Length: 362
Image 1 (cartoon, rainbow, N blue to C red):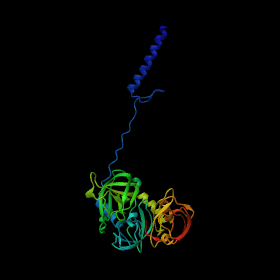
Image 2: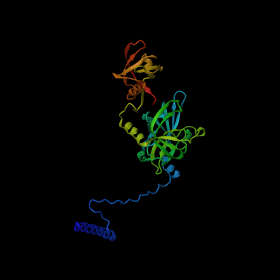
Image 3: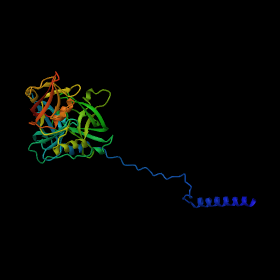
């Protein structure tokens, strides 16, 4: 018994001695099955802040690739003024849909060379508020450097550049910072007082003003990362918050451009001249598009469609709402022949065949 006890003490003393020697010699390893309480913590990597945005340098890089846009409607020549971004040397110009909405004629002044051009609307997506124009006879135009909105971060410095006030001349540049990358807004079109819900917008802490719509939101390197779409209102009348602006991210805009260039329309992306039925509609109950007005001189009126009747299908495809009717017409071109199924106030059904007319971007 005593020998066993002495043996146990000797073993404990030997282990203690070994640990002491290991500690003295600076042994850093771990004994098998034991875990060390200490851990190595990597020092954080501190990135140098990016250089501040130089507004003069960015404006000098972007300005030559911008255009001033004037859109007019018949019969009084009323319309809108805005901005655009030159994408190709032969005159493809990116702008906001609401700038050219309802326009019979569109004229463009290129900031880079000062020349005036007649423009045609190549296509548009009203839901995204994006349109693509083509300038007649253009060649050798300075083009914008298109960046990526995916790289944008809140608090990034940006420059909003466009035709402030619609007065033309040298574009106005407003410096600000990104405050949100996914804003949802309801934009009021001052030309026709229509409202449009826009989602996925960049919000910018900058006093963006009318006329800059369709202009460029540029980063510190002079790359376009957004298309200016809306302002918070007249800066002089903004209460309790600073003025700001909103832009469509350039990645969203360029997806619309790619769809237009493909030549394949969708329910939201219209390509080429706009076709019109010539009706104002609202949602019918329980389903369909109710005709509130058939406009004189246009196909629906000529075909005898009257107020209160309901369009239930086009070419055999069901129409469940006024929006569905718009989408169905959106994929057609002027001079296309379509067949409508109509239900009148008494519940009687009839089929009407008509030819779509040339309309304005809607």
